[in-house]
Amino acid sequence: MSRIYVIGLGPGAGETMTYEAAEALGQSDVIIGYKAYTDLVRDKYPGKEIIESPMRGEIERCKKCLEIAKSGRSVALICSGDAGVYGMASPMLETAAREDFDDVVIIPGVTAALSGAAVLGAPIGHDFCVISLSDLLTPWEMIAKRLEYAAKADMCIVLYNPASTKRVDHLKRACKIVLSADPADRWCGYVRNIGREQTASKICRLSEMQNEQVDMFTTVFIGNSHTKNEGGRLITPRGYTLG
Image (cartoon, rainbow, N blue to C red; front, side, top):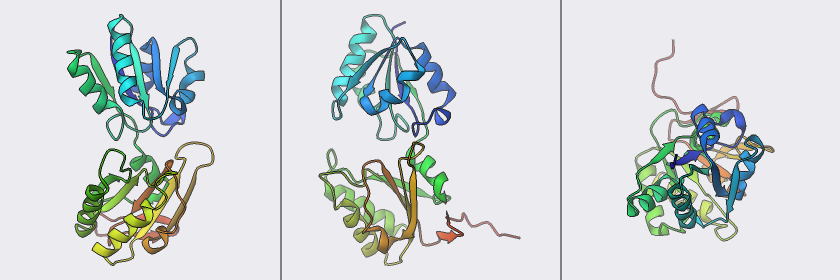
C-alpha cells in the first residue's frame, strides 16, 4: 500500500507515544526522519528500513517520502511532539499537493506545550498561545509583534525554540518584550529534555527567566497575571470558586 504517514512521536519516551502512532509505524515499510528522531524508534521496529535526514532537510525528506510512496511502499515521516505543531504535516501536505498525491495520513502526538506543562503543574490552565522564537523562517519583527500582543492580551505564552548556538539572546529579548507590554513580573518555568533522560525544570519569575541558559531542547512557559506558584507547582486558574 502506497501511503505516507506523518507521525508525531510526542516527547520521545515510548509510553508517551500514542497507540495510533505506534500502529502506523508498524504498518510502514520505511521510516524517515531527522537522526535524533529515528534513534528513538530504531530499536522498537527492527527490520524496518530507516532513512536518516539532516536537520533543515525538511523538503528533501518530503520529496523522498513521495518517491517511496509512488514506488508502492508505505512510509512514515516522523518528528517529535505533534506533526502539526512546528512539525512535518504542513510541508508534507504542501509537497504532496503539488504532485497530486492525496494518500497522506496525519498522526497527532503530544506536543511540548502539553508534556512540559505537566512537569511544571498546570501553567496553561487558561487561554494560551504558542510562539516559536526561531527566526529561520519567520522574521523577528513578526515574532516580536506576536509576543507583544499576547502579553497585552494577558495570555499564557509557551515558547518553542528559545535558543540555539546562533540565537543566544532570543529568550532575553522575548522576556523584555513581554515585560515592556505587561510590567507584571509573571511566574514562569522551563523544561529541558521533556520525557527523556536528564529531564530538568525550573520555576522562576519573568525577570529572572531572561537570564536563564536554555537551548533548542527547552520549552519555556510564561504565565499570565493570575498564574501562581503553589508549593513548587505553577497553576493558572480558570476562575472556579473553591469551596
